Length: 79
Image (cartoon, rainbow, N blue to C red):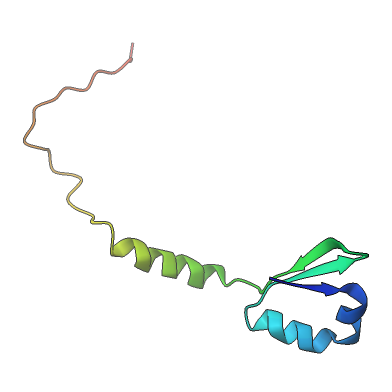
């Protein structure tokens, strides 16, 4: 993550916005202190799809309706 001064950002805004659009994050500083962070817009649908693809390789969905071969009873707190 790169730091850029506000004055420099104003002078070269199109170039910096191009970097952010390409995926880089920028910290904006004023008098040596960070005042803002510029981050690329994240496509939430694409990110969710990528996460599902990643989980698909680790998880397995089986039959969750059929009873197991183990006997058990559920006790409820119903009156």
